[in-house]
Image (cartoon, rainbow, N blue to C red):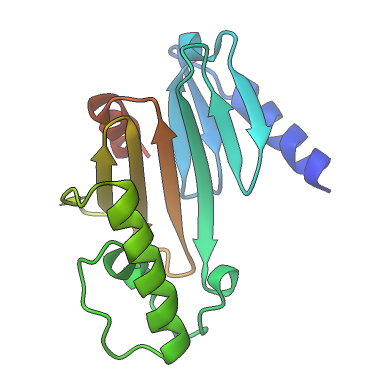
Length: 170
């Protein structure tokens, strides 16, 4: 099944090229725009989600996050996920399991990203959270009309400017 998934994603990637952009589709709501030129000599692979390693050694990895993925209750508001995991919102009103999950993840993010501030922006249809340190970036994209999933995109060996441009195009 995983091989079929990879085939469908790759087919989608190369079947949707126009205007020198290629779209990596994770779901109907979450598509990453990549310059077709950047895909020359790139490697596309599957881990937890679909990842791309570019010829300059930078990489992007995307993952859809749902309630059941982290063992969250069906009543958990996925729009709050990035707020808790990035420390934007206090861990109040959560179950013990949820508090522990977000507390541990927050500590790991603080360590990995050297306590850098979270950049937050919103528009009419989405909220975006980005944290970067050195050449590592992590983002969460929340589509306001989609209550069942959010999108996480991480980047390594990529500038914050390039990463932010990619994320804002989702």
